[in-house]
Length: 220
Image: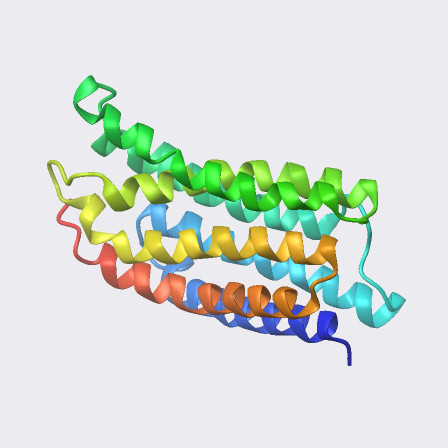
């Protein structure tokens, strides 16, 4: 069994376990929309890696270029971005100059990820793969900004930002490891590819239990 196959199977089974936890403890119960959106993000990863696993076992190779698997990854980070930007950010940041420095500092995350990702343009990977990964990377970078922002942002009003900092750390790690996974895939660094996928798998397992425990501290 190849390293690529092992990596894909690890993420699929880990994300599937996370999805089952999310369905039992979050989606079917009256939980906040915010945590349901994160559960749906994990579901997207599960669908994505199920597709990759089926491609490997039925066709013997991973698909090249834009595919259903990438749609799943895009969906994951769109849910994470929508949860933080649409559901949470307005509760903390009123857009005034008082919080301008936090908005500026939060740009460090997407800038660093962009510097890491730019390495794919110096690899011998197929152009369709590079173009497709670029689209995915842009959404990941956008999501990473708000995960970092909510880690450093001062708590206001109801304390909702402070309560979910553990979740934002895990989500930020997921952003970084996914970028490394794409770079490693393009550069054919298989051990980096395996490690980054293992980290992604770990994030998929722990993110919902951690967030569920933190959201329970909300007083609103």
